[in-house]
Image 1 (cartoon, one colour):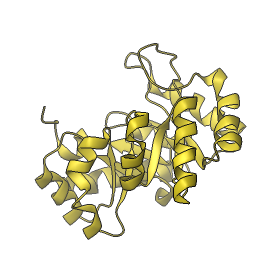
Image 2 (cartoon, one colour):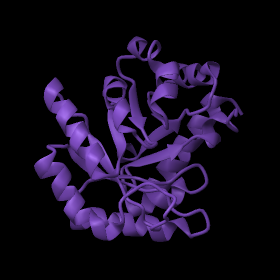
Image 3 (cartoon, rainbow, N blue to C red):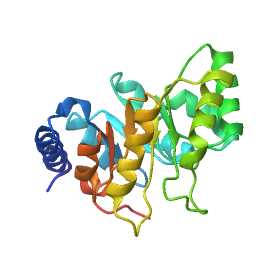
Length: 221
């Protein structure tokens, strides 16, 4: 199928899952993950009317979108990969949401740069729900103190949480954990669910699902 057809199919699946669980499909935002995709595929998604994209790396996002994004004023771009502190200025120039706030040094420097600019880019805290040592994100028990630090000391606009479940675990367990954590802290947004499992995230209140290969096909390495 074409990228336009893939987008239509995924939106249909989102609507079906949302309706089945008495949710408004408009509350579930489809983030098209465009990392390692060629420009013609990104343009095809834009031509199909899609306007919300996710990138893993600041430099690649600049290559993909710096010249293209100004042509689409309603386009939104999320950073869904790790952010190095030396890339904060470039990230804030380009991204409309940072989904991967995961450590105090990053939170502090993001807050300082936003204060200098007089801006407030919405953020999500990345939670390492599986407590995997090789993976970014704070552990669930660290969330209360880290959230307080982000909001009160750094002045960040924390909208919600994101997670990437362990590959070998049932993702629903981690989606349920993230939902519970968000409810405990009165956070609205949940970024969870990818190409293989986004329909399972919708019943557990996902507001952003991150879908790449199901839209664009296999990535080009």
